[in-house]
Length: 308
Ligand SMILES: [Zn+2]
Image (tube, rainbow, N blue to C red; front, side, top):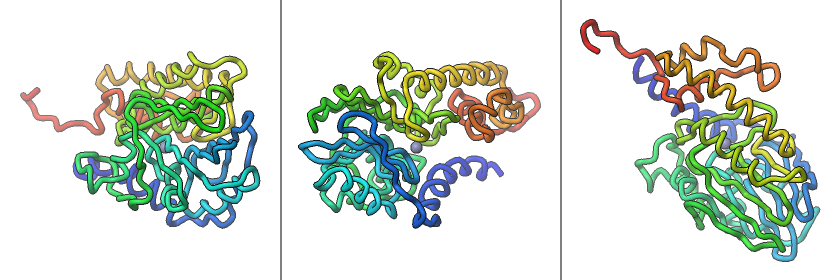
């Protein structure tokens, strides 16, 4: 029983939800839709994390690449807008619905860029100390240029600032800021209109998600466009609503953690009941991960009389 409790979150995050969903699902009906965001910047949606696309004289550059079976459709959607092969892929984090196309794009000539922890988590054979993922990515899928704090790309006439934030959705999150296009891609630090997934097994923390939102909100103006990891193209007001919801939930759950409630007990207490109609009807995973990131115990410890 204890073993099952310990292993369960690892299995959910690393084995079941990401790779199996890609293998088992039929992607034949998925269509890639293209939405213009700003001059030279587009958002592509299909199945998986939202894709950012920069086009211009230097060649296409994409942020995240969904699942491998969708690569040809993504390439076709890009070819509708511009010629040339994708020169760079930037991964906002390691999850398979954002990196599943890496191998295909890498073999087609793209340089894959990501935070150092993205490479580590996709590469458990080399980095055995990194927990939370046991699936080895193929060599061509791994980022070949990594950064720890920030990297700038001077590409397609824009000054593209890519920066890491403190552990939020994972410990390898990157946010992309097209300074000329006044557009952000926040990866999964921002789920528009719904509760986020905070991957505590990959080092995620609710405080980091709030801090990431605050950081972007400190950089925006009223015209800024924000591509979320999941959900519709957004603006600062959407991000502000999301941040305020997170603070409300975080503060409620922090009180419960400080009272000594376990993650199970906090989930059972439905602390987000009044918010669920707006932000999502299945809050249990979100509440559990907020509680765990704030230090709640996964399950009650053994009660041994006389020992504290
Ligand atoms: Zn993710």
